[in-house]
Image (cartoon, rainbow, N blue to C red):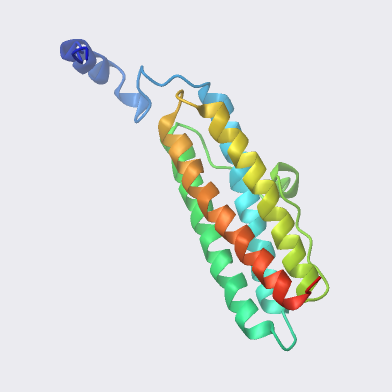
Length: 178
């Protein structure tokens, strides 16, 4: 096994010289502007998902609605947490999180579809989760080793989105069995 060697003096000098770059060091290998753009799309996606889940929480009616409403609310809170994590990462990279409501739906990977009953609400949430899973998986592969911090963040969110999709599939089987 080869020995790990770094020129600590050069690293210290570079750290002092480039302090205004914050968390982004010379070892950052990704296209920062493109990563910020992709993260702002993910931010919009998480905001749209938060809003859709919240709408479903308040609109849910029927015999199965109470437990499903709680699931919608829990997912809304988790999606909001994801949005906050993404916004923080955008800031760490020297970007500005885009919370502008104009164009929010256009920046989002998922759609805001209200649904008319419990089954259609669950279906729309499941579709949105599946879209997020595919997009976030692609982002993880794209970032690879160029931005391990952002990759790990997206991997963590991806794990939650997979759990959400599983939850929605289970709820759909309960509400609208095939």
